[in-house]
Image 1 (cartoon, rainbow, N blue to C red):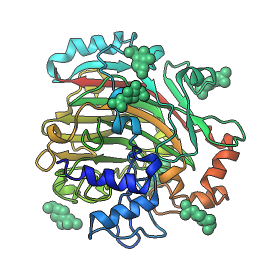
Image 2 (cartoon, protein in one colour; image 1 turned 180 degrees about the vertical axis):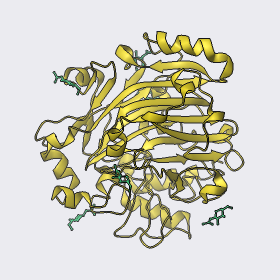
Image 3 (cartoon, rainbow, N blue to C red; image 1 turned 90 degrees about the vertical axis):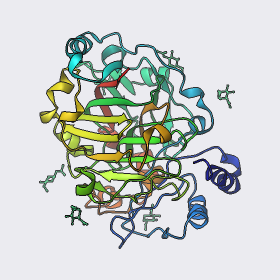
Length: 418
Ligand SMILES: *[C@@H]1O[C@H](CO)[C@@H](O)[C@H](O)[C@H]1NC(C)=O
Ligand SMILES: *[C@@H]1O[C@H](CO)[C@@H](O)[C@H](O)[C@H]1NC(C)=O
Ligand SMILES: *[C@@H]1O[C@H](CO)[C@@H](O)[C@H](O)[C@H]1NC(C)=O
Ligand SMILES: *[C@@H]1O[C@H](CO)[C@@H](O)[C@H](O)[C@H]1NC(C)=O
Ligand SMILES: *[C@@H]1O[C@H](CO)[C@@H](O)[C@H](O)[C@H]1NC(C)=O
Ligand SMILES: *[C@@H]1O[C@H](CO)[C@@H](O)[C@H](O)[C@H]1NC(C)=O
C-alpha cells in the first residue's frame, strides 16, 4: 500500500524543490462535459498537478477551462511529514461537560459510543493547537496563534456560550487576511465525531472545512466532513487514502446514501493525482448560507470497522439520541455519504486522526473556481457577484464582506466504543 508514496515524493521533490514536504489537499475537478468525473491535483502547484496526471494515469483527463470544480484536502507539511502536532491527547478538553456528559452516562447503556472528548462552552478552545504556518493551500490567509486570535477577537465565546472563529474584517490588508486553523491535540482511531454548529463561513473567497487527518499522509488517511467554497450551499464529504481503497459504486441507491458521488470511485491519492472519493449532499441547507439560514445543525462522522459514514441533520431534525448524548447511528437512516469496508477497510487506511477547523481564503479551491458556476449555490460566479476578477484582490480590499465568514460552534464531541 505504500508503493506509490516514493513516486509522489519524487514528483514533489522534482517539481517543488523548496516545498518538498508540502503535501496539500488534492484538487478534484468536475470536468466540463464529463458530468461527475473528478480530477485531483496536488494544490501547491498546477505544474505538479499536471506532472502527476501524466505520471500516474492514462485515465486522467486534462482539467477543463470552465465549469470546473476543484475539491481539496489539506495536508500540512507538519502533519504529512512530522507527527509532532498530533500529540497523544488523552486530556479531557472541557470543563463544562456536566449537562451532556451526565445524560450520556445515564443513557449510555443504549449507545455503543462513549463520550471521550468534548469541546464546548468557555473551555471550547482548550485542547486544540493553533496552526500558524503558511497556508498549505496557497490561500490569501494568515493563520494566527491563540493569543493573537484572542486579542484580535478572531476567536471568542459568545453570549450563548458558543465558540466563534472569525476571519479578520479590517477593511484593507496589504498581504494575507488573518484567520484561524485549529487541530485537536487528541487523536483517535475509530470514533463517532459529532459537530453541532449554528453558523459556518460563507461568501465569495471563503473556503471553510471541518475535517480530520492522520500522520504520514496519505497513509493515515483523511476524512473531510464539512467542506465547500464561496457561495456553495451543498456540503461535500471526501476521503483520501493510500492505494487499495475505493467505493463499490458511483450509484447512490446501490451505496444506500442520500448524497451524490461527485468524484471517482478510487480514493487513492497516489493513483489518481490525489483524487478523493467525494460525495455531495443533495440538501441546499447542508452548507454555507443555506446551513446558516436554518440555524445550522449536526454533522456526525462514524468511523468503525465496517466503514466510514457522514450524516447531516438540520437543526429541526436532530435525533433525540444525539441531543441526549447517547448517539445510536443505527437508527439514523441512510447517511449522506458512506465508504464501506468491503472496498476500503478503515483499519488499513485510517489511523490517529485529529479533527481540524479552518477557514482559508481563495487559494487552490475558492480562488481557482472564482470564475465558475454550476455548483449548487453558485448560479453566478464570484467574479460576477463581486465585480472583481481576482479572488485575492477581493479578499484584501473588502474586509466587510467577511462578516459572515465565521464558525459558530455549539460543540464538538468525540465518542469511541472503548
Ligand atoms: C517535528 O517538528 C518539531 C517542531 O517543529 C521538531 O522539533 C521535530 O524535531 C520534528 N520531528 C521530525 C521527525 O522531523
Ligand atoms: C494542546 O497542545 C498545545 C501545544 O500544541 C498546548 O499548548 C496545549 O496546552 C495543549 N492543550 C491541552 C489541553 O493539553
Ligand atoms: C468579538 O466577536 C464577537 C463575535 O463575532 C462579537 O459579538 C463581539 O462584539 C466582538 N467584540 C469586540 C470587542 O469586537
Ligand atoms: C442505480 O441503481 C439502481 C438500483 O440498482 C438502479 O435502479 C438505477 O438504474 C441505477 N442508476 C444508474 C444511473 O445506473
Ligand atoms: C434551496 O432550493 C430550494 C428549491 O429549489 C429553493 O427554493 C431555495 O431558495 C434554495 N435555498 C438556498 C439557500 O439556496
Ligand atoms: C478569471 O477571469 C479573469 C478575467 O478573464 C482572469 O484574469 C482570471 O485569471 C480568471 N481566474 C481564474 C482563477 O480562472
